[in-house]
Each structure stands twice: as structure tokens, then as C-alpha cells.
Image (tube, rainbow, N blue to C red; front, side, top):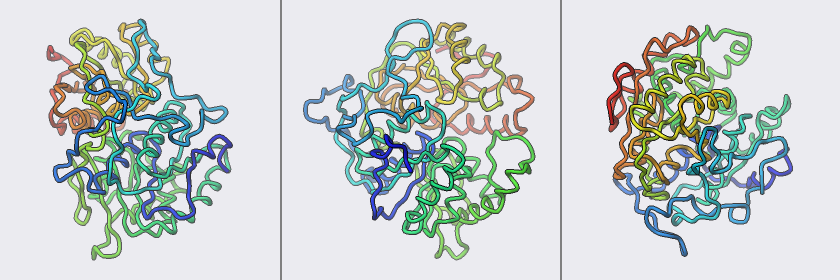
Amino acid sequence: MPRPRDRAATGATALPPATLAFVESPVQLLNVLEWAYQEGGAGGPDGAGTPATPAPGAASGPAASGPAASGPAATGAPAGPPPGVAPPVAPGHICGPGAATSPGHAPGTPVGTRAPGSVPLTVVVLSPHDPMTRGQLRRMAELAREEGHTVRWEDARDGATAPVRTIGGLAPLLRRAERIVIGDPFSRYVQLLLTLARARDLVVVDDGTATMEFIAQLARGERLVRWHRHGSGRGARDLIFAPFARAARRRLTPAPDGGHRTVGVFSSMPVEAPPGVRVATNAFAWTRRRFGPPRLTRAADIVGTSLVETGVVDTDRYLEAVARLARTHGATRYFAHRREHTDKLHRLATETGLEVVRPDLPLELIARRGPIGRLIVSFPSTVVHTLPLALVGTGVRVAVCDVDPAWLTSRASPRAQGFLDDVTGTARGVDRLTPERPERG
């Protein structure tokens, strides 16, 4: 059963819409909203959408850059997180020196009208443990409700019995759903749920750069393994779960005759789908309609990554690179990835003087809402593909700094350098910086 304070957030109905979506991260939920908006035809023939219309009483122009009106009264969301769960980090939470205000949520600030024409969804949030991720997911869940979608919050990892309870509660929805939308085909939880689904139409929305690896593995007929994972994948848990993983992979492979099972991918990444997989482009039409345009600052901003936390890049080399980029480009803020460790961020703030900002929403929404730097510098990550789309026409320049092979740890996957090079090399509309001699902005 859901925790008492999550009961209001569940929002489940006896008769769900024909489409059921499973998400485990804020970015996945953002891309589910983008898919629903485009699938409903609201994005227009060019995927650009229409400009936001200010809500009654809303300010107009760049200053109107907060999210749509929200809060318990507007959304039916709980007044706060359940017991034992850290709340979303408040706006203005800075880990480093200085007292600048984070471009976080300004409660009750209207932005624009609700996007019309989205396909109705039942969104199931398979909540992780990480407090930052949970906080961003709750904010994204509020936006999903404001778009007219049903959100069902599942504490799917809350104790040893949680998986059995979660799967049992979702089984009726899975049997009735005509279409399943998933944000992470590598998730064991999602793979297990897919074995219970009867839907013949499956859609995979972006889970960042992992989508590129998913498509490549699907085309090659390989088992689904995250790009940064090392080891043989033949441990006890892998062997126990192997039958479910194989079954899920079959579900994610289009039927040979094209009639009994269809698979689609909704992505902003440069992907070449295998035969039978339909691809739709995510142009962030909903984001551009709902938020911004942003007010631009004169300083540059740096976007953080979790490459250290995933064991790919050495901590000292990463911090040295961030410090160098800050000096070279005159950066003043560092937007932390939700998975970055607090101790690393405190060290980064101390050694670089950057203000470390913990966003309460995915960076695409934070940047579109503003204020944001005229230059955004990132290491190879999803945002080098998504930010140019979300910020088109705003005058913001996005640059990506390559990862030097010398930065990699001994624990990094053999595929790591090639994958990171592909992420950078395939990014469109960005400037490329070399780690040895960064370009001056």
C-alpha cells in the first residue's frame, strides 16, 4: 500500500487510459510529456508548437520565467514528501560560496496555459531511493497532473516486499493497457513489468544518451546492458533475472510481419533504428510552449555530470577540468547533476569558487525558464543534444568539452571512451572544446 501521504499523489483510477507509462527519473517523465504532446498533434507539423499564452494575471516577457501554478491546492499533490524522505531542495540552495538565488521553483508563479491536445496518460512513477531524484520527480508529477494526466506514485523499492506489492497492484493496469510507454528499457523493474503486459504497441522515450546504446544493442541483437557497466554480467542476480531480460528484449523487438507487435522510439538523440522500429523526433515542443523564453545573464554556466559517480572519470581530473573551464569561460554557476555526491560538490565549490546549484527540475526546463548564461558548457552528456533544441532561438550558445582518455579510471568500461566520443561527435548545434586547449568564449 502507498504511504499515507503518498495516497493523494497516487491519483489512480479504476479505468485507466489506453496508454500506460512507466518512469523512474525526472528526464523520463519530461520526455513522456513531450511524447504525449506531440502524439496528440499539439506540436504542429514542424514540432515547434505555439508560443505560450500567459495565464490571467501572469507577467509577460522574460521575467515570467517560473513554472506553472502549482502546490497542493492546484494539483492534489501531498503537502510534502512522505516520512523519511528528503524534500526537494529549496530554491536558492547553494552548496558553494555566495548567496545567489537558484533558478528554482517560485511557488505559485504562473507561466502559460496548459498545452492542449496531449494524449491522456496514466503515468506510473517507480520511485527510486535518491532524495534528489524523488524531489524532481514530485515536481514533474505536478506538471503532469496540470497537463491532465493521471499520476500513480509507487514506492517500488521501499523494503523487501515492495516489488511484490507494486507488481501485484499494477497487474490489472498492465493487462488493460493498449499501449505501454517506457523511459528506461535497461531497467530490471521495467523489464519485469513488460512480461506481464498484453499491449501490442510499445514506445521507448529518451532516457538520455542511454537511448543511443539501446538502439545500437537492439540492432545488433545483443542483450541490453548499460554502456558504463563493467563486468561479465553473469553474477547471481544477472542469472536469476536473465529469463525476464530475454522476454523483455523480445517484447522490444518488432514482430517480423509488422502486424502483431509494434515498437516506437521517441528521441532527440541521433539514432538509426533497426528495421521495423518507428522513430519520432523529440523537438521539445511542449517545453518551448510552456516555459520561457529565458532571461540571459552575462556569465557562463557549467553543467555537471555523474561520470565520477558511475566510476568512469577520476574525481581529481574532473575537478581540475571544471576549474579550468570556469576560468577560461568566466563561469559563475555549476548546475549539479541529481546523482552527484554532496561531498564532491562541496569540494568543487571550495576549489573553484563556483556556486553549486541543485535544480528542482530537469535542466531543459530550468534553462528554458531562466535566468541562464549566454554560454552553457557541458561534458559529454544528454544535455548537449537536448539544450540546443529546448533553447532554439534564444541566443544561448552550448559548448561541449571532450573527455580526455587520461581522465578515465581503471574501473571504466572498455566501451566508455568510444561512447563518450560518439555523444560529443553526434551533437548538433554545439561548439566542441578540447580538453588540452579549450576554446576561449
